[in-house]
Image 1 (cartoon, rainbow, N blue to C red):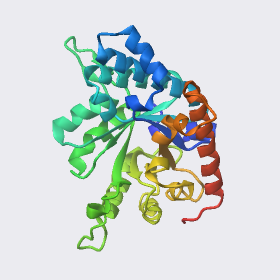
Image 2: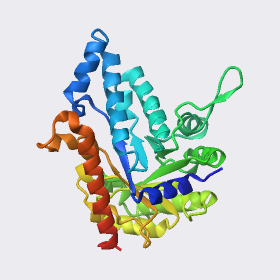
Image 3: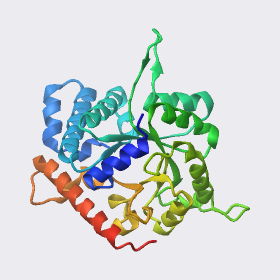
Image 4: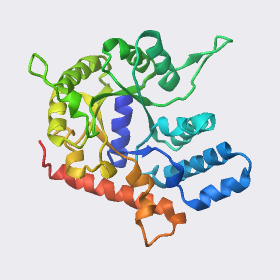
Amino acid sequence: MKNFADALVTRIKELDNPTVMGLDPKLEYIPIDIISKWIQEYPNDNDTSAAEAIYEFNCSLIDAVCDIIPAVKPQIAYYEMYGIKGIEVFKRTIDYARSKGMIVIADAKRNDIGSTATAYAEALIGRTVLTDGIEEVKFGADAVTVNGYLGIDGIQPFIDVCKRDGRGIFTLVRTSNPSAGDLQDLKLEDGRTVYQAMADNVDKWGKVLIGETGFSSVGAVVGATVPEQAVEARKRMPNAMILVPGYGAQGAGPDAAVASFTKEGTGSIVNASRSLMCAWKKREDLKPSDFMKATRDEALDMRMKLTYALKDRKYV
């Protein structure tokens, strides 16, 4: 069975593009023509018309970049807020992305312990036993984001599924939100910060899932908004695949986004969500119906900027 980290590293290398497209849909991101089409199709069913508009938008975005971007990252909250139909679109989006050869990282940031953590792990990246005793994959993502701040008993069930099914996890270490430092930068008695202690845990937890590429399927989330700390986190987690949020709409540029990459320019993948999904809103030269071209152009520009940033590292 192929190691998740190996599969991700291989796909990044094949496309020469260490980026992941976040799929965090809101109706306001979608061109009005798509929304109007589904309102006409389901005039008395707002839930279905909204869900189908989101699904069409997602599929179009995937079609626009599946040959240049290796992975997508649907954030489950954006589907949950549309109810049952939204959850169905989450699953359908995962299936469609995988059918196009993309790796899927479910952004769920799950956090619990014992049997509940096992249930989360099996639901998102594992298998569920049904009444006839047959195991069935439900959501079928390749990897999931998790919150490790409950300790190893909240993470071990995910690691067990990763080991059994060749899946992966990305554990929150140093996040990109403005108030992250209120907790994650606090000093412990031994002199480490909280995020440094979490990085050390991720490094330890990941030893059992290091693949042939030298990277572990127990990865980390390290934001691009504080690049000096990203450099420090990489030193503490030399084998971790690192998911990098914060690029684009959250304010981080390409130089900061590549801070957690290894000296060889590998080991991390940079997420962009709104800057790709809403690229059409910034293009006065294009019609809203040309949103796929706008997203593809933005993706190509992002790849070029990251490539140049890796050649001229400003944070080492």
